[in-house]
Image 1 (tube, rainbow, N blue to C red):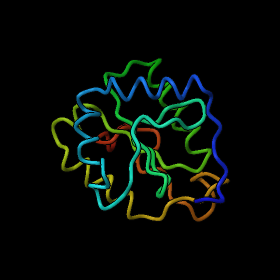
Image 2: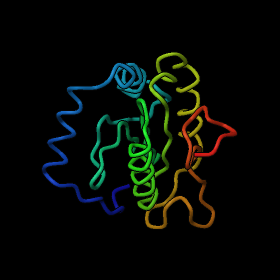
Image 3: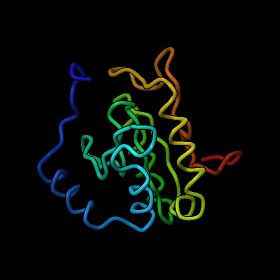
Length: 151
């Protein structure tokens, strides 16, 4: 990973990420307890990690995996979330989204989905996940648990 280019992040985004780490939602706290200190399959996750102009809720650099935990969603928030997903994917990251209630009521299934994503090949830098031979984001355009519904 040392040869990969880094996404530039402003000082204000870095400061905002630091603030968000102090104000995690209950669902984020619950998931963080299962991810921290390489507790999930030995994979290192960061919380509230700046990537460009956005802050990923959780990020695994080794697997180029972004985890987003969504609260109640309205149309404007959905558009912003889709924009964030597109930006992350343009930089070659896979994105998995979960709703707060999924994390709070079925943490085991959430962790299973994350571990499965960690075990699949990670995309290479530069062409995003839509490039030839890449795996698409497991939940591109929809939230986890919304199988069969359109984004």
